[in-house]
Length: 284
Image (cartoon, rainbow, N blue to C red; front, side):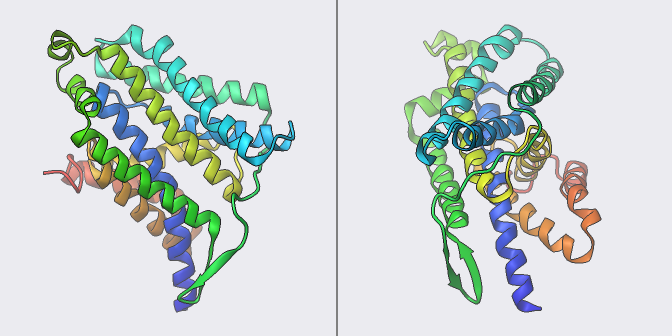
């Protein structure tokens, strides 16, 4: 029983790491533009599908396929900002949210049209694993945890101490005042979408060797990442990371009782948090 619980915990942390990366992407865009990008899950899907296509269909080496997935996702994020987000800047928040929902549908349909509906796979970055406290840890899972830790630390330092990070935060607080101070909100928005897409692409290429990736997987991943961002508090990246890990572990333990609860648990928790603590668990 204890060994099974440990396995569930490890698997939950692994899946929760993906939710944490998606949550970081939500927070990067929100802290810079004030926009809730509900197409973030589709960015993850595009990264995984492009990498799987490059390796499995085109026969490119794994390193080249991973770069293709990540760089391709960044380009998608920049195009989305230029084509859909920038013209709507200044619109009501609900209009911008509806636009991101439309972007999500378009990206999902384009992926199905270009790459088909079959799932794509990738080999692990590093095969094998190690035994820790009686549980076998795959090196791929350790890579995933390491990437999340590095991204969380780098983003926290970037937004707190880097001049560019403070400029991005200032644009979310007051775009007009930032413009008067010489900071371009359009440029900061493009950087936010590019950085958010980079995080999503990393999540996609790291998740594909574990669960595979298909055109319709991004929607649920986006919802779980959004749930983590809400649970941790929008604008609080570190809180979103820990909330993502928590949701991943909680999901796996819910399967212990019944698999019916797995897909609804995260959304149910978000509803409760919005009712009793709308700012999230990690914000004051």
